[in-house]
Amino acid sequence: MPADDMASDVTLLKSMSLMGVIFYHASLPFTAPGGFWTIYAPWQSALAEAFRAWGGLLLIPSFMLASGYLAALSEDRRPRKAGEYVVSRIKRLLVPWFFLSVFWMVPLYTLFDIHVYNRPEGFTLGETYQAALLGLFADHLWFLLVLFWSAFFWAVLQPLRRRFGLLSGLACAFAASLLIHYYGQWLKWYCVWETDAPLFWFVAGYAFYRYRTCAAKAPLWRPSLSLVFNAVLFVALSQYISRSTLIYWITCGIGALAALQACSRLARAYERLRRFWPCRYFEINSFRFYLFHMPGGYLTFKILIAMGMTTPVAVILLSFSLNVCLTAGIVATANATEKRLSFILTK
Image 1 (cartoon, helix red, strand yellow):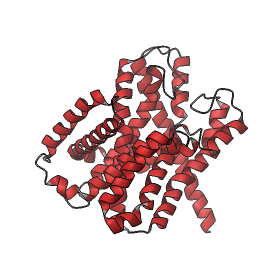
Image 2 (cartoon, rainbow, N blue to C red; image 1 turned 45 degrees about the vertical axis):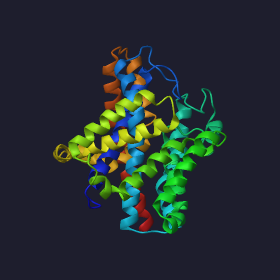
Image 3 (tube, helix red, strand yellow; image 1 turned 120 degrees about the vertical axis):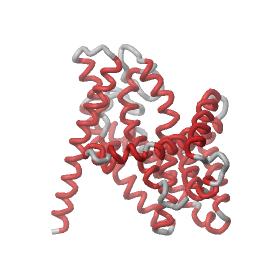
Image 4 (cartoon, helix red, strand yellow; image 1 turned 135 degrees about the horizontal axis):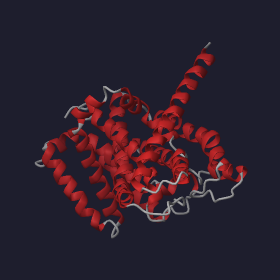
């Protein structure tokens, strides 16, 4: 299996995962109260609850698996020292986190007094800035921090991997995931404590890329048969995820692998969809859609509820659609502004 054979499928998996997260946030208000969310509809939806349950097991693991895979592919195409790779991740992940926190998240969440995890209702602008700059109030931007820590740790292990082989790095990464899970609760700043499972899935994606040739030779690695096998295994193991952290991590990893295989099966149909510019536009800007889609999810939900809409599925679909359109406009503005600033700075 050549390196590029699955690259487009993995990219599709990342795009679909990000679109799924936007829909996930649109449906969360209609789920049972709990977790980090405090904005709920006065009624619940079975559709939203089902998507919350299965989306929670698939979306972030799929994105992390894809990220690890593409990180390994990038390493082959452009070998870099650990320090160079970390600097590239700072530019790609931490710089957007900082600027979006300072100029987007804090002002808007304070203006609308949105109550989310580590930003209680009534927080002042200064208090919200303090929580954001300490990495406590991050909302959906927690993912940028988690992705950075996963990539950072894997880069730190680069000398070990090169000297003792990939398996030594995988063992250390697995041990680090367990240590963070059991002993990292006091590391509340910058989402370090939430990196346990994402690190595991990121490294699993890296390992999958490295051992893709061996995987292709496995008896069950026939595209359709392998997809069915992994999907059935994922559903079966999902009944036991509450019993063990390791079972939960493995179950999500298998689900992400099944999602990747499904993307491979959908590749031809997706190529036809890519002929339409909205589809291409989202694929090109999917990462920016993720960055800017909140707090639009909260606001569109509140607007529709204020208008008296009482059909959960209709509200979810409308909230999702309105938020995508709103975010598309914000992304287009951000792209145009960035080009304009680049032109000014280079004159």
